[in-house]
Length: 125
Image (tube, rainbow, N blue to C red; front, side, top):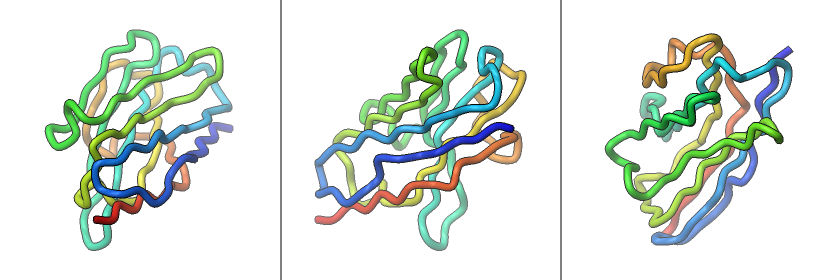
């Protein structure tokens, strides 16, 4: 059974950095896509960044491009999101998500098959 467990969230000042991790287990992710989404209170869940597990091809939302970096460690079956130059608009619960058997990153949350429980990121000024 696939499990995704996020960690690394916390409280950070504007302009600071955080690194989120997602430990994945339960299948061979070689032909999959893994992505980060986020959801702020009162807002819809939105795509942040995604990566093809085998190809390493990445995609970012315009709001985080140049500030966030997604990466994966295949040996550890782990997904990461390095977040720099954080702003109050980045505050949200961040979710790791898996889309099986598809190697192109898609931004639609409804296309993803598995989700982690989320990790809270709070940014204060």
